[in-house]
Image (cartoon, rainbow, N blue to C red; front, side):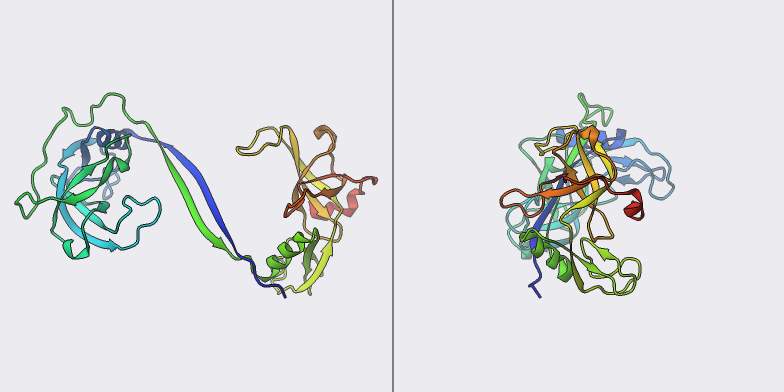
Length: 319
């Protein structure tokens, strides 16, 4: 049995969302070095602001400016910052109740070490030198000895609060997940076979169907599968679609065809691109064969094989 494989994988995409009036004012205010909260119907000031009262679900729009100074209500030390976090040196994640607010804002607190951080500590905002209308406009909090031991008063700078020119209306947040993928026994066999330009599946001992790629268990019967079966290399197009929108980062010219292909001997269709034939001549039942490129780990595409089309009855159960 081959050793299980592992590979580092990254899932990354930009997430763009539009902002409502409250979030727009909050982020535009950060760009202008102003922190805004919102007042609820019972008089509480929430920072960061929300658009609906968390207790009554009523819509709230009464913006209130709060101070850039505040008090640490709780914290946790981060001894090893990761990529993308606010500071590169060890820091504290802290909940800070800004003066004039009734709730706390989570952000980084730049402190020399964990011994210097405490609940009740007075802090102030360190603004980022370049601000764009994002939470990162607050670079972090930093210790601030203003001689007080409790909440101070907010200072108003705008009238009315939230009235800014050129408001921020959308934000784009990069989302990224780094992880190590371990495919397990069945998929490791499958991937190892691909390095030899072979495709293997596993047969269910109960229903006798062959699943490609193998999953280690039959999805229908729920029993373990361990009988390895080589399938293909040729197969039959069972269904397909014409792709007319070019994917970012791909150099494949549109239109092209992406198809479900039932490899000979398999009871589950794989996905694959069809080339070597005009897109409008691809059809169900077309017999195809894989085309490998040098050093590739899987077929680059499938092309027509020199065979008559498959009879519908031979693949209708795989649609």
